[in-house]
Length: 295
Image 1 (cartoon, one colour):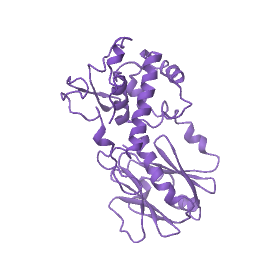
Image 2 (image 1 turned 30 degrees about the vertical axis):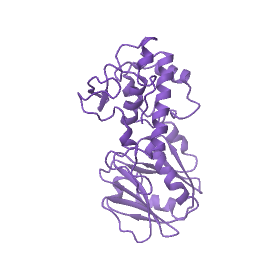
Image 3 (image 1 turned 180 degrees about the vertical axis):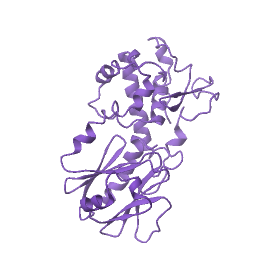
Image 4 (image 1 turned 45 degrees about the vertical axis):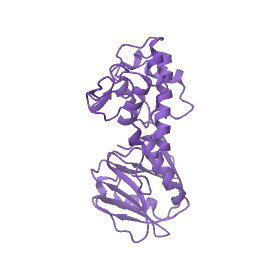
């Protein structure tokens, strides 16, 4: 599933191409009702004739902001792709919807599994989105102290809490595993058991793995492409996510383990990420503090 870095890369790749363009037509492909949050005709009436002011992002949701004050929201789900096509390019399989622009280009949405969603926020409705989402890990407003206060309210497994978009917006399975490994925190530990220093290390690890993934243009495991159709490069630099159970930890060589947390496969190293909280003396040997990197 595309997470914060992938959606941010899509945003950055498309915004210079789309800003200032006018949407002249909404073109339906296969099964548009499966991915639209409102009737096709209503969606078309709201966006046709509107100019694209800018592209934004909130968590895993891409925001196409129109000059009318309305915002088209795009959540890519598991296999969604939003890309720019030049005039005359044939529509690919699993194409569901296009925004035809005044220069003849199309912003196309395709989705093999159809778990993605395209919606519309009318002027003044942005709070509906904000109400569902927690703070952004990359936001300077999220301090270690604030994150620690939020963690202290929950006894759920820390991995499960990181996946909860109302707690922290934008983190999914890949980057939760990578950040927890880098911080030396067991994914099954209760969130409230983390002390302030561990929380500081976790926030630092989250920011490092997310920023690195953005720099490497996202992680392509299967379907992900940016807005210009290019795959990411971060998949070659993952440390723990997706490693087969029993394979050696890239830091200490111990066999890694795989468990299910919040219905998601979760890979971790029981030696680098012990269930019991680390002591101050032992923290210097964790993956995040030993100088190892996600790349």
